[in-house]
Length: 455
Image (cartoon, rainbow, N blue to C red):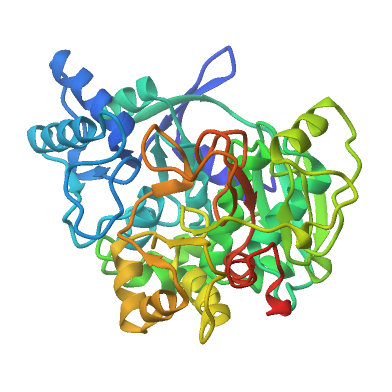
């Protein structure tokens, strides 16, 4: 019987299925960050439980860590240092690998998992973060989980879960011009709705996916969380095999025959099918407080269709019919697990080179990991950013979300490469517009929302 890629991944990890339909899945890798990992490790210690496979559990400092140059354990997040110290203590006592503040390979958990070979094709991986689906781009069965589930996965190497429905998103054609995977994701969400993939396991297929590099696929799978999906996956190919080959934790002899079998069979049935033409996608930017409230950079804001849209316009200080490209911005942010990989920084630097950000505008770039930062500095990208007027920071989640620490000012309009734009996401009263790195760079130069083709 023909099976989807998700079916194969699920079935290969399924230990048993109960009468209520829930399955017990074997978990190959567990990754945790300081905000929830410290709590789970402390709970294990209090219960006198051990980690079943400590060599397959990893701790990362990213969510509340300071990103300013010269940083230490101290953070601007209230209680942030306590989280870091607690995770460090728990990792040391249980023998877990920790990517600490001063570790040469520290970074955002999803980037570290990919770069280090923690996430490999065919494995299952859990992490207490909703954007763990990013790693589906490598052919990984990746789930975001809660703190109690994290504790259970650490102690037993298992996860109890209901099998989600499957959805195939077929991408015809190829991205053109200044359009990117971020723009494709925003187009998908705006046309299908933020709940269009609710609860499903999405497989991205098609010519448009095959033409993407691995990092673009990561961006697309990352944004599946904003589409409501439980997870997302792409069949691994030669691009993925090459990407993971040099990772420190990848096997010395890659099981390529097994990895190449990780794809949906011809004729495999999905519960739902939708499609998009990548060739028709243009640079996008959100106007509201949901990723689905989105238009082309040069297009006017549409009339509100419901009370939520009217509330979003009010919060954002916008009116329907106004071209977004006319709106001045106060700040520009490049970072997050969505768009802070080396290809993202290259794309932004290409726009910024030889130019300066608008006067009075705050511009910040936070590489996603120290590996990305090293690569960027070796290529001189840091000098391009700094010459243009951007702050060049240390890796971390930074101002992707507000947790009581650093933020943009109340009422400030920010164009950002992050994944969420709900009210207060980047600080109390902050108005966030989601876009690609190139659109953020172009907007920073002109001081208003702009397409890369206009600078």
